[in-house]
Image 1 (cartoon, rainbow, N blue to C red):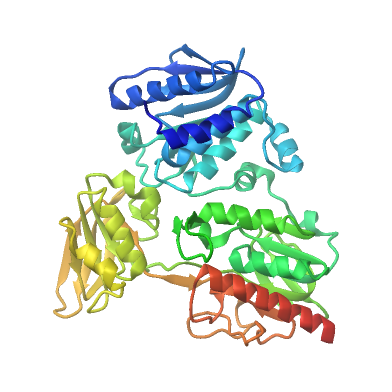
Image 2 (image 1 turned 90 degrees about the horizontal axis):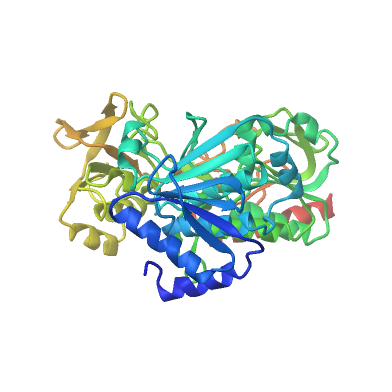
Length: 510
């Protein structure tokens, strides 16, 4: 038995939602992975003997199995065992192939069905990656809706030689027709955009001015949009990706009243909540500039200009770069920012973590359970992480902590092979041979695009008052892009609500 009782109970409920028959074509291999895959397929067929049939075949990779309609290859294949975070991807594939209608906007469904040509996608994942399922599920859905599209999920741990042969050092990594397509989390809309289906300026030409336009779709932006829309005023939200930085966050345990959730799950809930109101959501759009004229005008990178009586900036923050030679060159080739996603690719290898704050030490602790050895490099004389994390770190036998370490260069040829640092106390230069570098040195606000139009502090954060107002009348800001002293999800949500209420008061007075 591969699935425990709790998972089987949940699975049984989902399988009852199947609307038609599904054929699993199984390509058997050798070893433990193949054994586990056969156990999984057998349990699925046993739990739903009416709807799930099984037959043996020979697929491109073994062990693997495809999910098909009877008499029709749907184009969805799982190479390896889709458990962990990918278990949901398997369940959705079973339901959608059986005829269960997908939860997607009809406009997007029609767009997928209209794609012409032959497209075979391959996604390399790790089962501990919380970003991978979004990509897998999006490409599986496209395969269900369009017979010219197929998709194979490949567990990197089960096909190590293939992963190493392609120099894949970050997940998810997607290939299209054998060529690199993209890496990192991508939504369905982002994938379609990369395939040439992005909205252009003409799609925004006829939009009437908004009362409140929110720029940014993270917790602060979602909260601001909801509070504004509840006032009955014309509200829009433009976002590069809905959910923002929390899409890259795994466990969330301090969101009050929710004991535990995960970033992508919370992001989906935020988007679902916003869609309950009359909010014009403009996703996959990046702001380029802002001007105050009769109305506030926000220019997008696609050339469109959106006008509004008030604007709320909630563009959040991103991981701070070290800014040394080799970092940009080897990004996704050994330089990584997500230990949960990419850690399994470095199993049995030596890696470094740059940063001694909470995020850096949490990353080192997680990685120590996977890799051969972890070296923590901290610029200051002491670690900044909470004492409980430091105690846990120092208890691990395969971790070395180097303080007063100034990173000089990340070295490599086609991928990372080491890191060079300077001992700030002695001035001596040291080099460590390793396979991966995880950068965890805090955040930088996404405010570069504002230039000198709005007052920012020396760290680039937007300066706001108690009502969320900025230096430009009618322009407000909220969340991690502001000078709020604490960067927390719950604080961002509160500041989004404050900014929306401040914008509403401004509209009443002007």
